[in-house]
Image 1: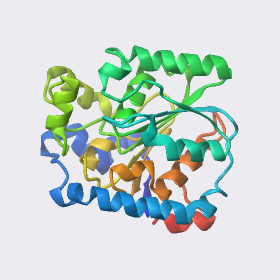
Image 2: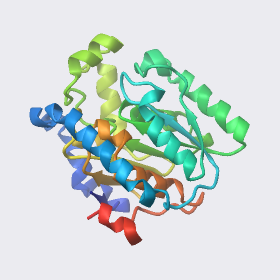
Image 3: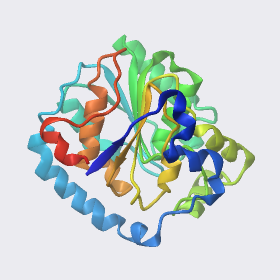
Length: 276
């Protein structure tokens, strides 16, 4: 199940979803331990739900063949996004893995995101069309940073449980992240990254988040909204963003919009049961 959060255009500063991340980041806390402990069980449940929902998901709006680059989460590789990529290919997109190995932040994306930028340039050049980015967790953070650096080759950005704003310490895995990446969560650079992360991109963007996320605080995963920026609430585990049927439907719906005709998310028809 999920629910949409409408943007408020020029009134975005009053959006309660992003207000805490933008104004009081230190008040944001890591997810409750019970959600972190339930991650494996919930993921298994979501995998089962995906299998049961496959006939319905197969009737989602068809893609127009434009290229979609899918970025994996922290300490994951392209295997982690295999189900999502297969689904998007099934409904008509030219889908690409990121091909940068395990996502270890700057070690994989490049210190200045140059490896991801090169990947986007390569895909856009071959396809002759703009690229949509779908990023899970840290992959979504990197996708938004890529869109800020150079939006010229991008069609839209969709993030799945991605902590791009708020308090960098509000995660269940701070020590693991610091050990693997060598980054300090509270470093000046990281704090700047989060302090600016909630600001809208210059291309359409949709931020999917879950208040029962077991890995990152949901407040870190929402953006200030405007005419081309939205937040969509989904009931999902953190791992489930790569296997949850409601997430798959929302991603398919967002990607199916015609270029230059982006509209905010609304669940219709038989899919309304996924949302509230």
